[in-house]
Image 1: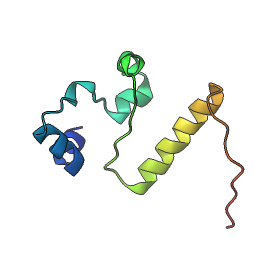
Image 2: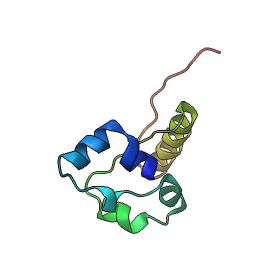
Image 3: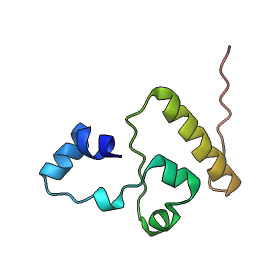
Image 4: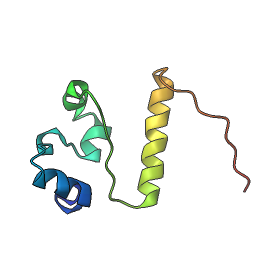
Length: 83
C-alpha cells in the first residue's frame, strides 16, 4: 500500500497539501477478502487507486461489476467485442 500512498503524484500532492488519507486506505487484498468491510461500511465515498498493471484493473473491475450486479446495484451494458 505504500506504493500508492507514498509514490503516486496525486497522493504526494495531497500529503503536501495537508490532506489526511492514510488511515482511510485499505489494501486490495483486505478489500476483496472482506477484512476491510468495517472501513468500507464507514466510508462515504469509495475510490480505487491502482498503480498495478492493466490486467489487475480489468480483473478488479470485473469483480466489482459482478458484486454490484449480484447486489442489484448495477446492470451490465450490452457491449460486445469482436474477436
